[in-house]
Length: 272
Image (cartoon, rainbow, N blue to C red; front, top):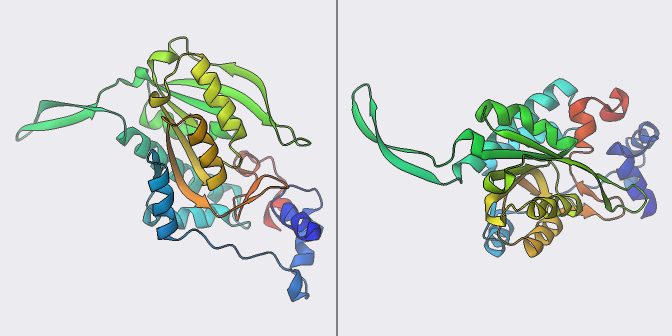
């Protein structure tokens, strides 16, 4: 069992010996291959959303191709970034669609119509990034809402204890009056997101004014966040079936999103 976990960790880019391990897995011993993971079916996803009424899972018809590309260990940084940005844009648009609207009458070139526009101005929206991977959301966020403010929270996982450790925060002074969109591409144990949510609450942000966006999540992380912060909203593109508890990575997962997006993983490690 331990050997299998080591091999999984290596192919995810968690271990420096990933080249050797992945090449071994591609060898002739058919009993020594990586597991084949199967995603939750529609019935299971519906049960999960019924359990958590504030959970939104993007329709797979919009996301399955994109996710298939960014999960692929052979995807280079150009295609990884391009497709990650596409998926991030979908999540952001979904988050905006859930913000309260105001109705009023406007004029088109041919007549009048009932307009339904955001109740809040760009300046009343704040994107808060959990560093560093959350920064990948900011390019698309500012394309959609150019006047939004940006907050950042640096939380990193202790590799020995797997517990989140807080380092730094920079948030707008009026954040308690804003609609907050918290962003982090992966939700595994939920430790970092939980700490970030508590920091936001300590600054006076109401739970009901917080939407958390994550590309890939799992049932354990979702359960933790909703048990601790039941009024927040969470939007995810996909729920992975497995959390590898020994290394706290999702499976099949994406690997280290930050390394793959920001180009801090060696090419041969990402492609083996």
